Image 1 (cartoon, rainbow, N blue to C red):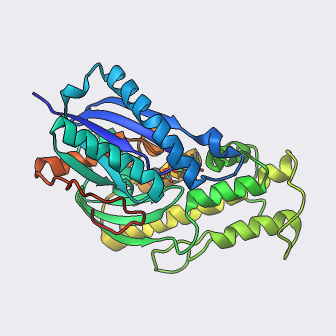
Image 2: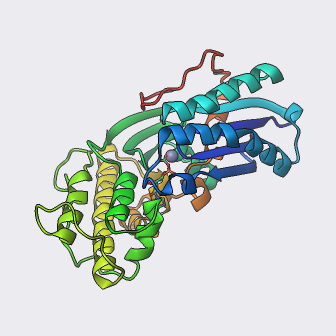
Length: 341
Ligand code: KG4
Ligand code: ZN
């Protein structure tokens, strides 16, 4: 008989509960988004996020159990994504997971949110994807990994300032588009010319596997308000704004594709898996597909629902469960990515 896992994600602005089995079948993956609560602040407000998790977590769990047609007594293990993220938000999920594991008398497992984003590609593939290069592009991270196995990730490099998703969100605010910025910029860019502005592409010519997006954000500001000026009226809808969105998006895509290719060449690996909210971007996906074909590399992209934050990606912990790597009941919420978890 298979074991049912109940997983909790509460690292940022999505409360998610998933139920999956040890053969990686997803029985429910419910996401309660807080987007509307944070929209007027143009970003996630940590305390607002933590309170909303506290309110939403149990109703979301109830809904996941209903969708999976299961009762709590059918759950054989509890998983929590305990790092990285906003500490107050993480604490809600970690506390709930501990209580649940204790009262159900089942094993508690922890998983790393960033590594889980890559595991989403493994779930979608339905077969092993390791060893591979992993590219995580989210609101908080832009990182390249050498993923030796599901439980052995080496960080190859990351951003020295903003994450790619953060840049999308900030540029969306600059352009007067909505929050979250990624999908809004992608929509606006669809009618724009990606060559209209020659925005900077940091570290493109260097061997270093590093990213920087804060200069790009400033370049977009200057393109709108004039060099040296960071303030002015928000651009109105029309061709100039679409061109700015498209040129910005192209700059991000060019850098992500070039650095992923560099990581593949440097490691000699022939598989690339991507994850995180920005990996839902269709222009990025198309550019990666072209690069992967040229490099004769297999590309693994999760479907939209598994790209953005969700608890089903916590199935990476099934790999720990096979090895009985339980989490202790004094498990902590760890805000920064510290590597192996
Ligand atoms: O992985 P995720 O859901 O949460 C974090 O772990 O951060 O990523 C959220 C980020 C946001 O910055 C959002 O603007 C971005 O992913 N995003 C996108 C797209 N959809 C979401 N960025 C570019 N294009 C998209 N279609
Ligand atoms: Zn994420």
